[in-house]
Length: 223
Image (cartoon, rainbow, N blue to C red; front, side):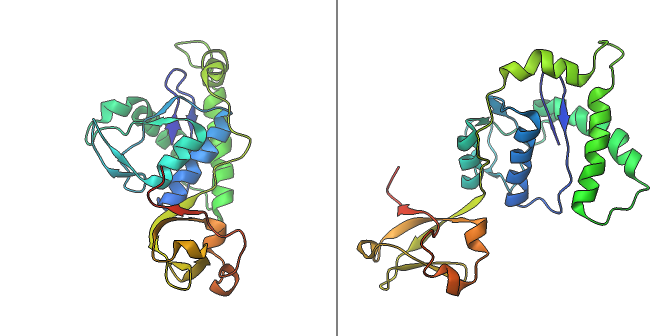
């Protein structure tokens, strides 16, 4: 779940697990839902995205950092055991638990897409509900206060990729899991950065071996 700071405009979805591809995919869908990108994201210290928690110098997972760079958003993880660093989303989680999970608790879903469709309907009701104290809905507050402050979403969604350091063997191939990718022979015995997209990662080795659009590589000394 995510909540914008000024309007408390929430976004929520269900995922099977919380691995790095799910974590990054949720961010991509969140930016698309908001039709904009904030200047800063304050995530929890989920190990999928934050390799080392620190208030002054957190270590962000490389794939998560590349996603942030793609959207031009800063990442400042909340401090461990400091819920006030992300009080907006903490309050939003409690609200969603009662207004979404409570409403859907007796329903049975047969796919993740079906569950998320029901969550989206409940989320729309929350965002369109007029808040008694302010006299406007969260959606109205978002449209009037925050939408103009968000940066535009890139025309192309970020494509999840995994990064690995690999040594080029004498047959000018590098290995990623059970797959092999060819690189220029001038890089034999050098250590390189290997970037594997989800699409390439799922190919059988015999197809990936000579695939012209193999994952990007570069010498590890490059900036």
